[in-house]
Image (cartoon, rainbow, N blue to C red; front, side, top):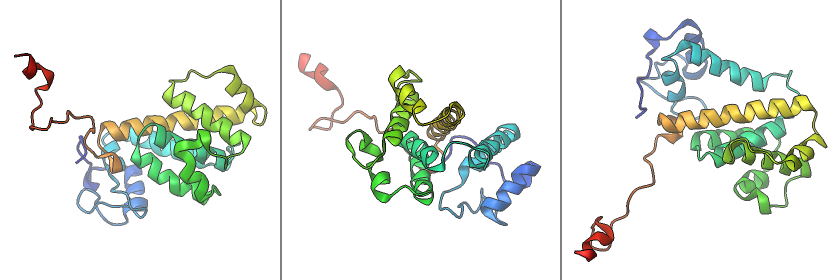
Length: 209
């Protein structure tokens, strides 16, 4: 279950109603969940709690899909796919596996996203993008000059800015999805204490008694 209330169709704001129609047809997603792409759809029914946030998120998707973008769809999706993996967001990762294939990434490249550092199926600029994404997500934006130089060797400054904006936006989406237990990120935290062979969780303290 999501950690926040879902907004039923009877309460959704006007643009939310438009999006609900595109995503869910005539259904109320709080009663009959599920989108055409197979997701539960609660990303939208929860973010509809704040119409401004909902509209901003929809605008972000329109931004990256716009034909006005200079960054190539292949590099864009490569970045979003690695964001999903690096942020451990199954929602972002799974959705962009599909999107990556749609824009021309091969199955081999999609499968190698987890170990791109030792894979030989990526071009130099693709490897530079993947290194950059890891700096953004795993190092909090700490990017060595060498990575920027590798990007600038093949991309314009506008392309780098667009890549940065889209990548960090989807990093945020992955964090939100995990925090609020939305979509495929509606899972329990795997970091739990494992009992010993006797089923105890007292640890070494019991041996000191």
